[in-house]
Image (cartoon, rainbow, N blue to C red):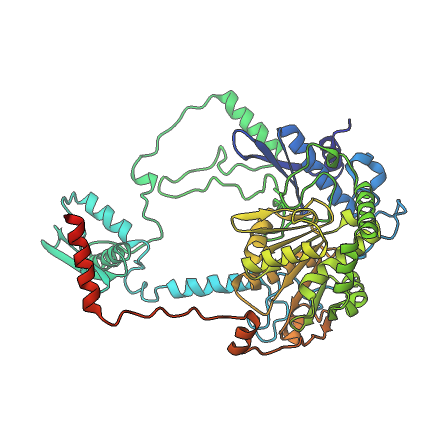
Length: 597
């Protein structure tokens, strides 16, 4: 059997590249798995594979990266064995692939013309600077910090600053052999106060400093700076010359060294081969007090800067692939799904869907009930817009059916076109209870149990659907957690109720916008009942907006009297209390006396 790792190494060798494999362990000691990540210089994608052994994990990761190269057009599908790919690829001109549903790349970008994910928005961009990027913003911020930390009065005090004063004070204490010298800390209000007093022999008196700071470290640095500046103005210490280290000339006197003449000849031969002129020649007179640099001005070798393996912040994505479970993010090692292609799986899913639709009367009735919802009238328009655009906004009033029907529209369309394995949908909900209830409702409408084509994943509770042709409902936090390991095998992302904005939902929109910019094949649908569509559409470069009319359901009022009539409520008769309380007490006491006798 062909090894995908060998094919990847062969392709990298032809392009003067080198793949980087990283393997780590996962799971418990009873179910140990190995996760392998492979990356190549100059490519933003990271191939991932896992298995019960390292060899298969590396093979799965290499196969994942080869699939990425085929999708990007770097490798033709004919050059690889059929077991490495799931089927014909549209970007490959050498293979005549059939037209696949929703597989065309939109011509329009999610960013406006001239903008990229690194371009800052108008709020952070200076006036007249259209090319101002995030790295420029960081450079300006670092310059401001350096300017704020600059001590403009340092030249008056011998260039002693808060960064170098403490080291010089420690040298002064050690050179003068001062003992039992330490900072004395006290607390004043919300600040720390550091105080130190040292005896100076040249002055024959003590020099004291007392400074405050937000913590002990800053207070001690300020105290040391005050002491050093006092000693400088008193003529005890010198001005700061740029280095606190003593030169070797002041410690060791120069002396001659005998070197083997053969070794000298070898050194001169090497210098002659490299065309390097020695700094000191045989006839050069060396002054003992002068400083001579032995560093040559000639560049011996030029080293090219190392390229970054991949851009920071780019989340890997890929469409559904064979031998991959997108919900668990693991390879399928056993069973028929481990070797089946996506076309074979699509035929099986389509066959099961048609048989169920023809044999189940409950499913037909459910379909008729769904067709009465207002969103059903927009089904063809919704599917057509999603097919042509990477990002779509659907605005519909409460009760129109967008939450439960849009995801089913997409899945049913794939199943009817015999491409069900190419569809995996993630639908987010703002709360845990809504994710559970919507998953139950969609499964009920499809007349199946949760865990077949519909599942959910919330914190501490998950029922995942099948790996292909399925819908997963989850919260925004769960989706963000999944994005840490990439989003492979997912074709559509539906974000519901985006008008309930919070930190997680806003951050998710930023991440999805960058992902769509790098992977235009990904489809993202935003849905909400009440939303400022102009603001969101402008943020996504004027993406299309679909309006769905709502439906006003009949409301009937019931009062408490009506509920009593409907339930035939009969009040419980009240038990009358005894009028003569004393007689009752006497009878009780008499009965107790009889029992004692």
